[in-house]
Length: 179
Image (cartoon, rainbow, N blue to C red; front, side, top):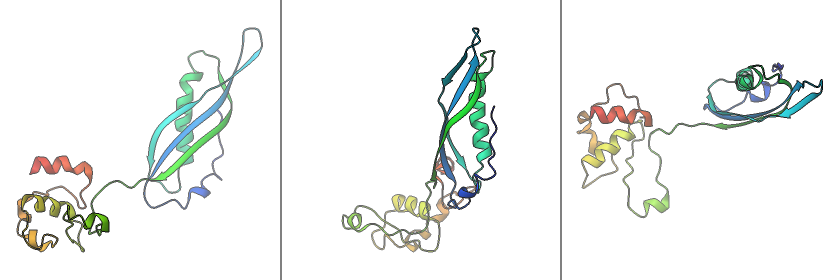
């Protein structure tokens, strides 16, 4: 397997966003082998690696190359005679990954607000929007529906043991089983 000097490749990744990154990458190595007629054969292969999430900053280029080498290895082993001559390209597509989760109050867009079809509770100083949303559905308010104090008297009804706020999508099954 060819090795790569990645010491200079990490500097451009050092200013990535504070959110984890989703990385999609593909590799196109050229492979060669000596045919039985002493003729050198070449072939090009494409290797796709599934998306990965990286929380390291700077981006760990070495781990990406290791992943690509692990994909190439089955192709070059088992007596095939193929060896990697060069890597024609290694394409990386990097984007910020922001997991979906609740937060504190976010103003409702004007076009939705004028339809009067949702209740957006104004929880300005907390990440309890999930709890307020559940309580607003279970205890519809006749007055002050967007005021969190309207629902505070019902908060004890919710078992939030072991569930952090803002509530992540992955925590909803736990919430459902506890409530």
